[in-house]
Amino acid sequence: MNTSDIAVEKGGVPAEGGKKKKSVREAYTSFGKEVKVFYGPEDLQGFDSQRDLGEPGAYPFTRGIYPTMYRNQLWTMRPYAGMATSEETNKRFKFLLKSGQTGLSLAFDLPTQLGMDSDDPQGKYDVGKLGVAVDTLDDMERIFEDIPLDRMSTSFTINSTAAVILAMYVLAAKKQGAVPEQLRGTVQNDILKEYVARGTWIFSPKPSMRLIADTIEYCINHIPRFNPISVSATHLCEYGAKAEQSVSLPFLNALAYIDEVLKRGYSIDQVAPLVVFHMAVGGRNFHLFEDVAKLRAGRRLWAKLMKERYGAKNPESMRLKFSTGALGGGMTAAEPLNNIARAAYFGLAAVLAGTRSLNMACFDEAYAIPTDLAIRTSLRVQQILAYETGVTDTVDPLAGSYYVESLTNQMEEQMRKTMADIESRGGIVKAIEEGALQRDLAKQSYELQERISRGEKVLVGVNRFTSQEEEKPLEVYRADAKIREAQITRLKAVKGRRDPKKVQETLSGLRQAAQNEENIFPALFPAVEARATIGEITATLKQVFGEYKEPRTV
Image 1 (cartoon, rainbow, N blue to C red):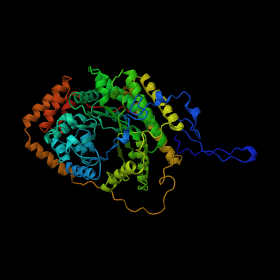
Image 2 (tube, rainbow, N blue to C red; image 1 turned 30 degrees about the vertical axis):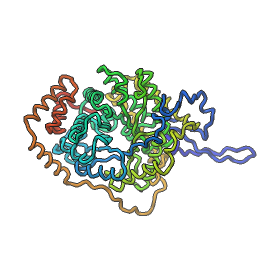
Image 3 (cartoon, rainbow, N blue to C red; image 1 turned 180 degrees about the vertical axis):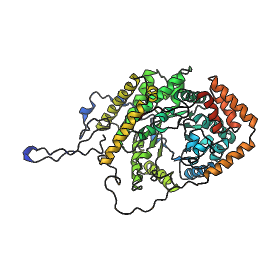
Image 4 (cartoon, rainbow, N blue to C red; image 1 turned 30 degrees about the horizontal axis):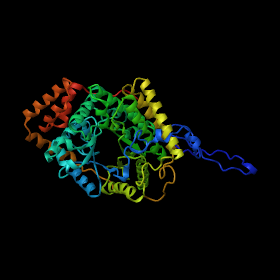
């Protein structure tokens, strides 16, 4: 249940003097706790502002991970982009940078995410549809043509093939004259949530975790300013996770990745500073104060976990660094311009919670990849928040609110309970392998949809306050039907130019590294440089790792 949508009217109670009191709407948190009509000092008994909040930029970082936050530097405005071919994506990136965007976020089509080339028959309907098609290093170089990568922060939403994409990015940057030490950005590389909520896996959990550890290890030693993993909450939320679960479940995933790298002899202070998060705000079950409170509670809990469980000494290890995604699942197909208002409130929650970076869904999200108008409007919403509302003038402006601090405490308590419960049953990887977590979240998603269908959860323009006027046609993005044909022509040309012997030798080296349980990056770079395709590299790794078979969960 959510505080915003419970509308059970209680019967009136006679007041003093015989007058009938006005009925009061009941409200509950998403974890079922009753929300009071108002809060006061009695709701913060035992609260110690120094211990529980501290100063911004200081342990336990409840108020923010930097002392001055947006007074010193605004969050990175990073609309999610990537479409069709490398040329079209390059054109979209330049349009957004010219419009004031301050970082890049690249979306890939499904074949690229699944390690298939554009000429693979299994992916023939998806080439260039949900993002850009990348088959070889040539595609990556064209995406960033005339965009100086030594001065750009780039985020990649890629998981199973993250290592290959990172190798391509490093080589594309080198061609521009940039050295790896200069590169900034993030690869999502969060495979555990793919088994739960999204489905772009290739290998089973064990080799997948190894590839993630390889990527983190490579970044520790060669690209120290690049984040090799961004543990994501957004897909878990879209799949049914509630507010506190959207923090506690990614935390469990992150701890599993950290443990995997620690086995290689690294210290927590080498690993933790490179682990970042992509937290969620908004969605169909949005509640502004819960979204703010969960992220404040998350910062405090992460700091304690790193210090108390792992013995971290470096404050960088204790800082919860997160970008924020305003969920596209909260955008409705009905009355799509209402989504601009929704996105603004989602963005407000992220900023009040102290996000470092924000990408927001566009008003046409329910239909297709955003048009130029839609993505520019989404960017303008962020710019209005930053420059017209005053929300950036002070750090953590909701601190000290009886309600927000009480809710923050409750969120931390619920997160601890969720984490302890899953760990007592064998841990997050076991819960995923057995399908238990998938079943729980699917059930929650179903129950929410039932509430929407019954009208208990209000969606304006969908199940209440619907318009009777005929909607004007909405301009939507239409993918060019010839994208795949063009991409296959380009792929054939690359294969015709490359040295086949060198391709085979480098793929053989990659297979050997995988078999010998060596870090694959030293063998991956020569294969990518020889123009081995993403499909050929994936097929080589499948020879060693096999393929994952999904357990029955529903």
